[in-house]
Image (cartoon, rainbow, N blue to C red):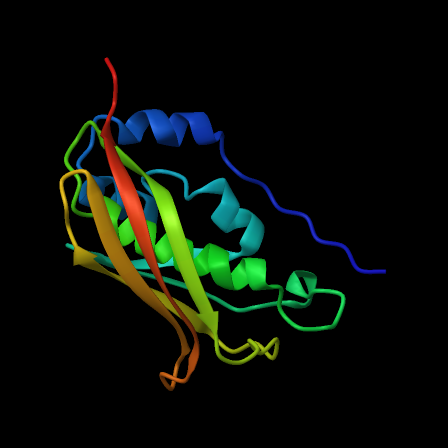
Length: 162
């Protein structure tokens, strides 16, 4: 039997801080450790490693606890990393007081992810930075740019209510 334990910060604190920050500043604060990273990322063990206007990169090493009953990395891990990258790419363009939610996600898995310690990156970039609906795309690749999956999404953009 294997076990795993980890901790995470109160997600409410991070969410509240984000309401008064521009998206890119919020993401950079999480990347630099000024704010805790998302609890989902703690759970799935991947980190925000790059933030620019309209582009973000998450990186992690798929592990045994992510396997499905057939012994391959669960599709939810593919989707989680790619959704994070696409949504945060859009978030990097939002102003203070704005937030988003994923409206639609399309995912194509082209090969299984390795669990041999390889670093996998989810690279997300905005395709269309609309005012109400924005779209983005992402690729899941290894250090040699070998493609494991690619995805597109649409996100709905909202303003926080005061």
